[in-house]
Amino acid sequence: MSSLLDSLPGLVDFSQKSLLLSATAIAFNPTFWNIVARREYHTKFLTRTFGGNSQAACYALAITIFSLGLVRDFLYERALRHQPSHPALEGTVPTAAGYALVALGNILVISSTWQLGITGTFLGDYFGILMDSMVTGFPFNITNAPMYYGSTMSFLGTALIFGKPAGIFLTGVVLLVYLVAIQFENPFTSEIYAKRERARAKTGGKKGGKKVEGKKEL
Ligand SMILES: *[C@@H]1O[C@H](CO)[C@@H](O)[C@H](O)[C@H]1NC(C)=O
Image 1: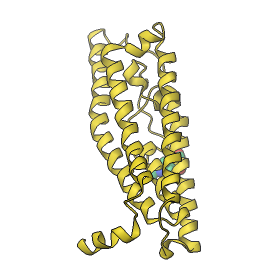
Image 2: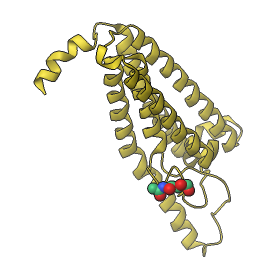
Image 3: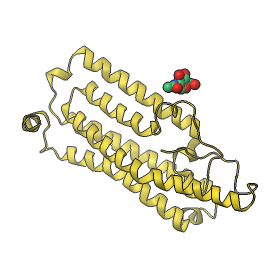
Image 4: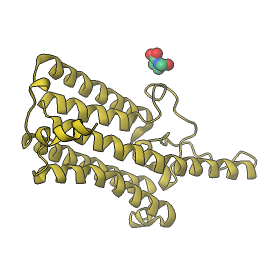
């Protein structure tokens, strides 16, 4: 382990500001959407901004999160271009593996968005837009967080396509950030749904089950 760390400075150029900027963007995004979504859940400030239309408010947040994701991806690729390549990552096999990972990652992300819809993918439950039942079909039958693992796979694949060890390092940052996000988000989401179940039980199971799409557990 210590020899691995000793060899890291040669593999990753930590003096590049673009590396720090990319890592910051990676950590910023889930932090941002969790703070905004929890504030929305407690105060409904976004829904009020949109005149009480929670769907519109959720779509606005979705567009914002999606745009932040594009900025993050741009900064990641720019950071990789400033980093040294490694011969072990430059052959046909790593490159092919990189494209396969990006393809698989995108399948997970796109199929998950397809299953959940826009509001379900982008924190709709914090806006009171709950789904009627859990989504259990693909990709949720292979992982409970296909968005996060799919995104991580795309980062790793891009690192291999570029042949840059720094990309593998940044993918580690992505995974860490998502694992923390899952720990933070899942209990909260579960509690939102548990609350609805309690409300349903109280009203005899007839009310509170608005038929709208919602997310499973991102
Ligand atoms: C998940 O669902 C898909 C599509 O229904 C199916 O093809 C696949 O075998 C399932 N995977 C597992 C692990 O159950």
